Length: 80
Image (tube, rainbow, N blue to C red):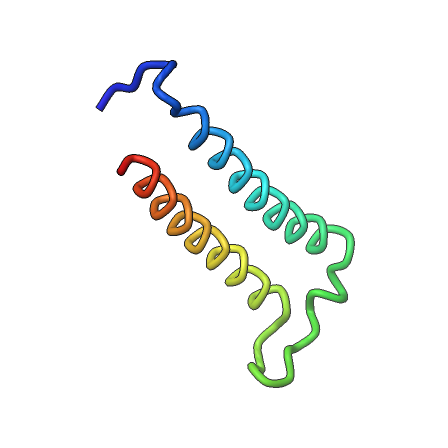
């Protein structure tokens, strides 16, 4: 479906960009921690018995899924 520029679609664009900024922040935090704190990322999470880097990687993926669901729900509400 094609949208005109004046139909109010800028609201979802700004919302989408905000969610994208959150995802980029989470992802680059993960990458920078892996690069500059490799020793800290190697310790094992006591309850889960998995490396912290693996748990943080799963968090990055889950964050992307949750943000996608939030975007879809919010955009569908705006469309009516």
